[in-house]
Amino acid sequence: METWQQKKFEELVTGGKPTTFVQDNHSMSKKGTLRGLHIQTENNTRIS
Image (cartoon, rainbow, N blue to C red):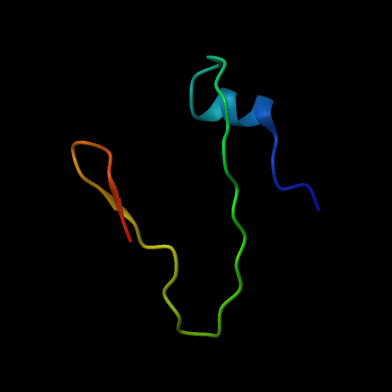
């Protein structure tokens, strides 16, 4: 299964502007589990 297409990402997200994709994560959880909830503050510090 293909999980990433650079060209498709650039078309849909950046309007065709070249960009660098850094990270792609996959995870599995039991039913009813909330995962991957992150927020960013103005200074771009990630809080998990």
